[in-house]
Length: 590
Ligand code: GLY
Image 1 (tube, rainbow, N blue to C red):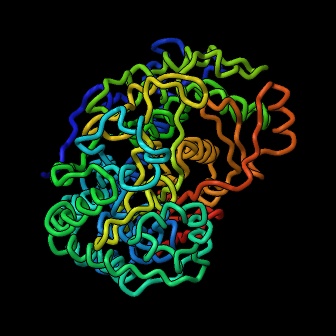
Image 2 (image 1 turned 180 degrees about the vertical axis):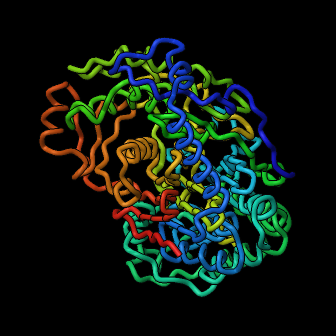
């Protein structure tokens, strides 16, 4: 099966939602804007046209050099290796995705999926390549009700049908210039000869030792004599190298057919899973229209459902566009960001799911009128308890995901967020494949209709159904003004969206990638009704101010996220890139 191009329907082809209204100032009268244009001085119009032409020429020409930021130095180098051979950003995206699958197995892999936001410079085509996993064809809403505890997290019953291999083949065939043999070569080399794992691997593997021990193939690869390896451990993945070679030779059939498919299905079924050959044969990637919005002159493109990322991001920005944040002190500003998140995350839980299965009111959720309604429920002097908005079952997502960002010399753009869900996914490797399977089934509402740990019932939009894609929070994003383009994203489960939101607000203040990836982080997701913050995420004054407004604050005992970002500043045609200081990533401009 090939791929499906999703046509403009209500949920994927939005008019740009206007977030530019600044309701803290007098609103212009209807018609005032067009009158202003008619009487604009000629010199001003000429200058504007000239600026537009200069930017258009530069955009058409591209920056002349390339930038890559990824979560691992070997993955960033794999991207440049492929660019050096004449590849474009999309070939580099294949190389980086495959290399991350090898060198950061706790975050993503061939056994997982993701979302690649793409902009092709030559024709401006902008799409989300949706390689999200699907539920097996024999899956159903009650499949975990009588299963052993943890069955949606560990072992093969937790695994959705992988989308990452199909997405790599699609990228190479429809957007790239190089054959897969070339773009997969660096990943194959690292899998074959091995590499020394870093501290992040050593930390991430500890809580997953028991899950990995449940799979003989996984523990032979990822553990050191059945125990958690330390940093420096040489991770060699011969079977994975062989699977990558089959994909390089045969394309899609190298994973979804033949001996790989046979071993995947056999292994999953022997371990108690429910995959069949038809699940793999029928898997399709999708090209979707990204969601688009505007915030204070910035055009935003981001992930459409089945990721909730773009919807929640744009809804929160629409709410915030009614305030002049720059004029507020730290606590007042953060209070508004938190209140916007509370409302946007609630709608995520209430409405969002796979567009092939659920009709979503996206046009309404992203409309200025809806944002104005939500804004009118925000008090500047007091936090609103989430319960007052009405009860909806909340969901949280596994946070071992990864992100990379690429701009090539021609101005092609890629922002890709990839995942196996929790660290090392399900911890299960079907024998002879080297493919570590995801545990994305846990991103579904696994017990819809049942009260969850908050005593709330819900989750119908994201209930399990055969072939359905589970709701995600991945938020690969482009930000554009006439002068600047930003390509960014991060791992972090449900916190992904609030991290990208903080980066957008930082971009709006004129800061660059070093700043976006470094800003202190805080997060509210409707329920639990608490503001989570990193050790340096809030100042003492912020904490005092937010507590006075009635917020419950919870310090997270670690710094979270691993943002990877590139900026193309068209004014001097300059590229800059940054990797999150919290991680081990590598950003480079060449
Ligand atoms: N599994 C993490 C996400 O999809 O957001």
